[in-house]
Structure formats: C-alpha cells, structure tokens
Length: 212
Image (cartoon, rainbow, N blue to C red):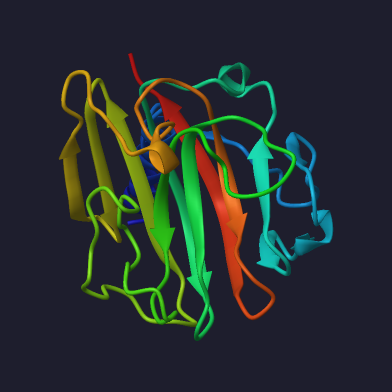
C-alpha cells in the first residue's frame, strides 16, 4: 500500500506539472507588477490612481492610466486582454484599447470598453462604448469579475466572466462623427479610466496575450 501511495503521489505531481506547463503555455503576460505603477503612464490628475494590495485603484478626478511598458512595445494590434475588476456602487470607469498617451481629457484615439454596473450612465459593463452598447447588468458591485477584450482583425469581442456580451465587426472604411473620428481599429496601447471623484474601481491581474 505504501508503494502504491508513493506511485500515486508521483503521478499526481507529474500531472500537476503538466497543468502548470499548460497554464504557462496559454501565452498571457502580466502588464502590472501588483506593487507599483512602473510601466504605466498618467498625465493630468495622476493622484487618481494608486496601488494597494495587488490592485490598481481608480478614484479621483478624470484621468487615464496608459500602459507604457515593454510588452508588445506597448503597441498592440491583435490581442486577448483580460483583467479582474471590482466596481463600487455608482461608479464608472473604462478600459481603452488601440489608444495612445494623452496628457488630459478623454482619449481621442481608440475604443473604450465600459466598466459600469450602477452609474447613471445607462451603458453597462462590457459595452463597446457608443458603438455597440449593453444595457443589461451582468455582474454586481463589490464583487470581483473578469472582463476580457479580444481583437482579431476587424472583430472585437468583449466577455464578462466568460460570457460574450459584444461581438462587433468594424465595417471597412467606417466613418465616425467628428467627436468620435479616432474610434477606429488600428493599433495602440491600453488605458484604464478614472472617471470622477465619486467613482472607485479596482483592477488586478491585468494580462494580455498577443495574437497573430
């Protein structure tokens, strides 16, 4: 029996090693070290972003925190982005992609994916903001959930806790209004949004997998 137990233990360890290897082979790379805002860049109202206990906290005046690190040379075209997010009641935030650093104001380049479960803005979490919006609330405030953005060619997919909530294909030669002319697929970095002093949103485990 001792020998059998020993063999079963060895087998379990080997299987565990395979699981770890498979997990690592998924290709996701962390964009946040969990301790500092190294590799991130913010312009106006930088105090709206702090780090605590492995989380980036967005809380304060309008500000945007742009990824500025070495992964993908902070210039992504096709990718699978995911982060764990927690909102507090009445809060609003967002995740921009294909964007570029901007000193202040709302980013003019790229798309925004909404983070909002109970703010007065009716566009809810997972919306491709003002392009393909979601009215349904899929997750609750004060609970961690996973938000994903996948871009492949002209297609954008957003997921909440694994559930697809948006599938959007950008038309060729798409035309936007003057105030949204930068909201087109191209390439660029990611940015987290600090929306207003009454909004407090937490981010952790921010990762990306670069797609061909």
